[in-house]
Length: 196
Image (cartoon, rainbow, N blue to C red):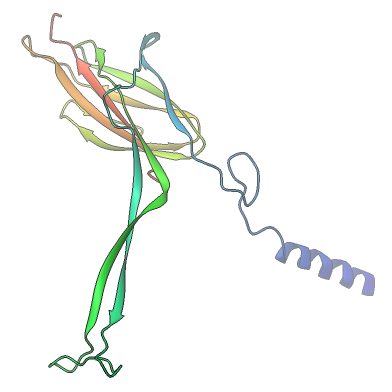
């Protein structure tokens, strides 16, 4: 009976002192793994062989460093070394805001417009990632997204309504970003004019 007690005690001790860290995307524990998050291809949902190229806009700024700030507060002393007291009875304190660049650089990818047909259609965008991702802001009344989030490699899809205009193309924009906001993609769909 005593051996059974020691065995159970040892099992409980091992369970309580187990690894506190969660495994990273590559299965390693306790290591910081950088987020990668890339768009793969865009294809027509009804015909996956109809693929649209993705080209990064060479004129767009793509990297941003996070700026952090903190406030330094310092008590003002008089010539005798005593803290200065203001007329309202509070201490005279100076405040200085210090700004500095953080260790994180966010990547922002802007793609040239993807020209698609004017008809109503759904488009699938494949994603390659080691993190969770979200479709954020959608700009334009013609665009909707039935799959707003996911994790790891996967896909999302966008539905574009019919462009009835015979005189102008219509643009719709989608932002897709990693959950920690260190990677963001701006994707623009440009629908052709009706009959073009």
